[in-house]
Image (cartoon, rainbow, N blue to C red; front, side):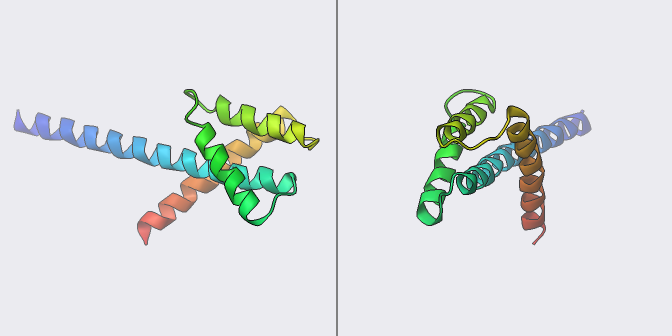
Length: 109
């Protein structure tokens, strides 16, 4: 019975670690997305950094990633930057992969 309990604890620990990694990857993706959108809108330096932080904060407004998507789309539209919903979603997916890769390489160091 002890083996079963140890296995269960192992699975719980792995699940916890996976959830933490997913959270960090999404936060990093949102920062990268904010930097990408800031560049499209012509923001530079501190303004671009502040905007990227605002995008990260937007993710805490409601569950899921729609709050981030909605913010990016609204801000791009307000600045007359032409990006379709598909382009932004594709960029979000692309940057999630980049963020995961960055986190995995940081962990290995």
